Length: 130
Image 1 (cartoon, rainbow, N blue to C red):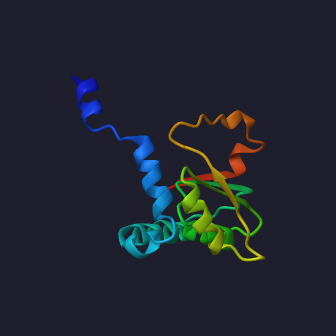
Image 2 (cartoon, rainbow, N blue to C red):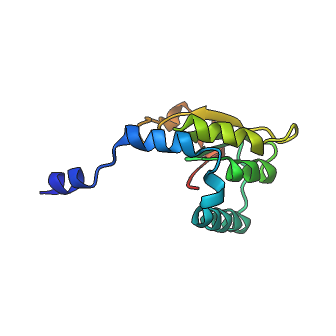
């Protein structure tokens, strides 16, 4: 029964990817809820003391949070991950010559991450969201 329910609500990943590919350029104008959630999540970082060397942001979208993460942690390498190249192209506009972050196309839901390969897992911050 569980499998039947899961199948009923399964997403067509190819269709989803095509949709986000097309939406990259105009996504921010419609993403009001995402902007609110992003603002709140970033505000909560004020409550903790972190000095990560690497920040991995899955679902980076158009790069607004990646830009802010790079501003907060200027010495950290920020990796903006998204599965839609259109979103990553839009994210390029969030960079400045002083605050660059890496944009990587990857399907984070299917990626396998092994923390033992991370040089210093205690100095790596991972986030996902808007």
